[in-house]
Picture (cartoon, rainbow, N blue to C red):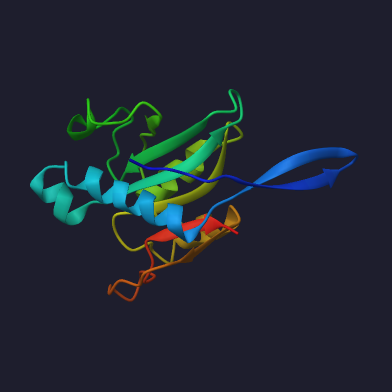
Length: 158
């Protein structure tokens, strides 16, 4: 069970007070754990070679908190391994690219991304700049990996 604590800071912008959502290492670690659970459902080759990412976001149309899930699969629709295995607030985001990249590039204005976790180390060339461009920092536990990867699998807004 994933539990969250939302931290609100009031910001004044042209006289309008808007909440700023923050993430944390603790909840990013829970999202990393969920990405591992989902990755474990994938077929043998994809489990060993693929990536699953899970990001917590606010749906700006409904105000509801959701978990956006993506893989490195180019399929636009939910992969068969995940059918019937997503929780009620989890939304599969399909598309070509790295798992983190797919979520960020498809979030648009509809979702405000807060934090996330990935089943594998975040790559330096594509995903790290996208994550940092959304105001999130990489951190947490460090994992060994290739030179083109960061040592991190967790990220959050500070």
